View (cartoon, rainbow, N blue to C red):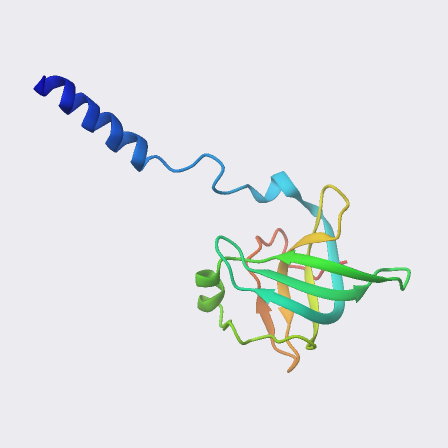
Amino acid sequence: MKATLLAGAVGLGLMLSAPPASAHHAFAAEFDADKRIKVSGTVTKLEWTNPHAWLYVDGKDESGKATSWSFEMGSPNALIRQGWRRTSLKEGDQVTVEGYAAKDGSNNANARSVTLPDGTKVFAGSPSTDGGPAK
């Protein structure tokens, strides 16, 4: 009886300590490191959520067509260490976001840096492959 209870307790402890398999995704699973983008536009929303913050920008594509973009950024904790605050951006701010486009061709991207309204350029949490400017 004691052995069964001990085995059950150990099994339950192992199950509860294992991280969920779908808790996080790899950059390369969704974004193309060879497909750099640069979008200038108006902030429509900043979601300060875990595991990633999201920045929404209404900008224009290469042809001049108005387009809404969703940019995945680092975690709020990582952004705070880079100088961000929950109030760093507000709706209506003009920004330029450099990053990596989604592999699926959608208007989602992984932000590498954001140029704030005051001209300050801040890291947004993406890996940098070559340190050069977005194309």
